[in-house]
Length: 513
Image (cartoon, rainbow, N blue to C red; front, side):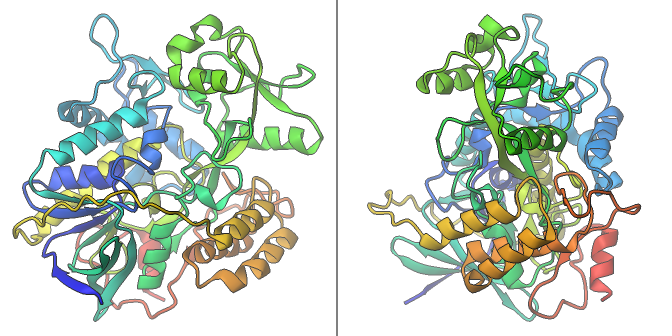
């Protein structure tokens, strides 16, 4: 029997950086944060190595950051959104520092800035070397736990976003004590990405697009679901998910070579889609790909990248002496739930922030280290919008900390979907492979993982061009005009948009249909 609880406050689905930032920013107004697993685990935030991009250096400016972001996005970015988020980046660093984040600094107290691919300046802010994501996650978890206004529920996955009269009415939650219906008119999706749909991924295997499935079934519009970024340097040592070797290693001088010692491409700091395609060509030709860090950073590797060094050593490799075998792996999803500047989706009462959202920042190819930035900025913007529009300010619900489940059963559908998606919608795609994948996924559409995979493959088939993270062998050219691929819900669209926030052009087009 389902219990009904009147939340009377926003419910945030996801306890990563975006969700917890929103919860902290909303305080002292109450909210409930749902985590599918234990709070502070199972989120991509904690795995982020590279850092957070912000124009805080003396030779830098948010306008330059915006230019680099737009160039990487290959025509699908929303310029106004890009400029707004990059302008907010320095304040995001200050806000995180105020929450307790310990960023790396030089002896003079200034932030130590790194360089990553497609950035024109050193603007990557790190924390404890390659532990930036872990540090930020620990910071916001601790900050949220200190607030009486934040009710944290772990091991409580959202099963369905409930709607009534064309707007959000609540969330159906699975808990160890049974199903609970949380009644609320404000829900934020902060569920992360889709890397777990692929056999080779750097994401937690639990990241399979649950937020996209929740949004689509509830009636929200998705955008550019086909746009998947493959990180070119996942450590290929038989571990699933694959350990990530941060792009910052190449920023310190490491190069990509094959087993013959030949360079894979002349500029190892090219945009990630360019590097991934070059590596894929080597792999298809029967070669192996390696990251050579033996000269640069060489003996400094352990000091600069402690976590990566430890992982390599556990696999029997010394980065200062050995070549590191790497390959492209699904890393980040540029597409997502269509939102405006405040995070509002096309379904009134439903918001999204972080990787699950399509804000217009990343376009067809995410600029390195813009993801943590987007999570912080847009999580805060959503909470500010709720305050401005007068969300309920009742008493906070109690925190529910459940014990870890004692059993776990592998899902055979997930294993099958990973095989299908990897074969048909990987780094290089074509119509035959996509149609084969689409037919194979059809029986699994009732399963959330199967539904998201089907939406991804369908969108990839509809985009008959190559752009950013989407490469079609049968359509190698880029179309003269960039266009979004929209995944419409299986129910009538609402007649009006949510009141909060400016309306993006793509959204206005959808709602006019």
